[in-house]
Image (tube, rainbow, N blue to C red):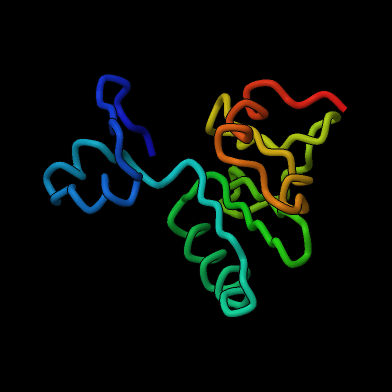
Length: 133
């Protein structure tokens, strides 16, 4: 999914932004399937996230599908191959997961194990420049 650079969301949550879109406006902003979908797995959703949604997103052509599982402290990442199937993405040598279609975004799976989770502003800084040990 690509959002034109000249369009900005402004100071609202993404959910508020989506609620304000009608069908015609949505068609202007969305082009094709999502580049990345991240599901936060819970005990109630684990079967659907790993089964039904996995197949739905794969069939729909979503480029990258990630499953963040806070209970297990892990992130599973998959990329849609040329064969139309998801294949696992492994962290790079520094431990970062990077979606292949969304340049500039990265996530360190170890963050899922942090207690408490860092504030959003801290996480944004870490994405730009990782913390020093």
